[in-house]
Length: 235
Image 1 (tube, rainbow, N blue to C red):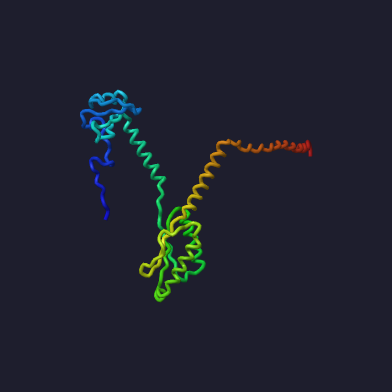
Image 2 (spheres, helix red, strand yellow):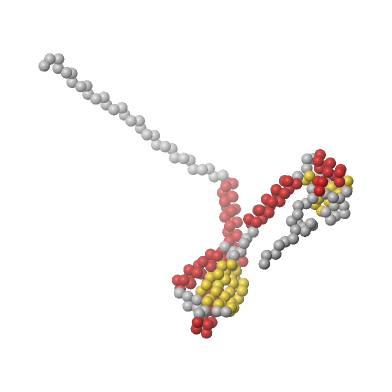
């Protein structure tokens, strides 16, 4: 069941009071350049903000008296929204992908699935490796353990065990997480490539000159056709 968050009066989900919405009779005012303007009656504080073409924003309503800052509130909200959007872009969403195997999985199928898991872990995600048992296979759980142990050995360079192998009904599974050393190596490599690209761009290497077009010789004028024979004067 989803839980709805209550938007309380003092919560961060509510916009700060501005200008005439400020209830206090006097406030401590901070100028647009963070200079302290002292405690002023609310009317004087509003007048100072109006003179500068800005807003009076209540930034600390619980203080005695409340602290207000003179600022361009519209621009402030725009920049805050922009920062939030940039932060969301930088957030890494970790996914969990499940790969199912059998106690006697064919070699080709095993190799293909392990390759996919390796790529998935390389993208900083996690993987759940599940061995499914059917019928009499339940009496040979050691086969499932061997499969998972082989997976651990094959992915040792890119994975670490987050959840050790365990049984759950007719399934034996474990969860693998990306190897921190592998992720750090990827970050270092990306930084090195970015630095190299910046260095190449800063060096300003001149572009290769365009090839000089080969002149095409002018076509020679066509020879004049021979004159037609004169008609006989008399026949």
